[in-house]
Amino acid sequence: MSWTTNINGDLVTKTINGVQNVVVAVPFYMEKTEPATDGSNKTVRVRNTVQLSYDPSSPFIQYDSLTEATVVGWVTSALGADGVSYYQTKGQEMLDLFTTQSDSSGTLYWTDVTVYKPDPESETPLPW
Image 1 (cartoon, rainbow, N blue to C red):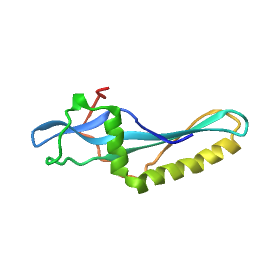
Image 2: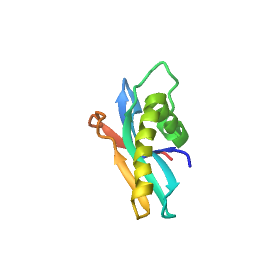
Image 3: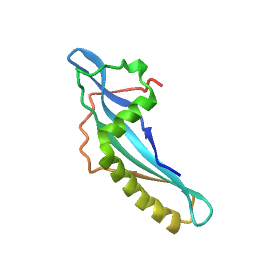
Image 4: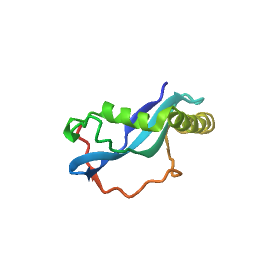
């Protein structure tokens, strides 16, 4: 199976220069499921938060008009190819161990705590 990227909780927003609900941080996870040697399915879920910057010269999407696909696109764009590869490689290493050395089905969670995450100003419930 292939990797999927999903939003993992509420978006972090700020008011910047009078513009409300500017998304400045997105908690996300990348997930992949594979069959294990014991016949069950094993899933790894790699979690983190990506920081976004506000560019007033770019078109602004109102918070209520955001879609999950748009925000996932922001996450993958902010990570870049190297960032996406980093999380998928780390996750695959764990999934390989999980599928060959564990006798239980389920999901393995890994949160990358090596990236600095400032305290959010506010969290806003997802619009979708």
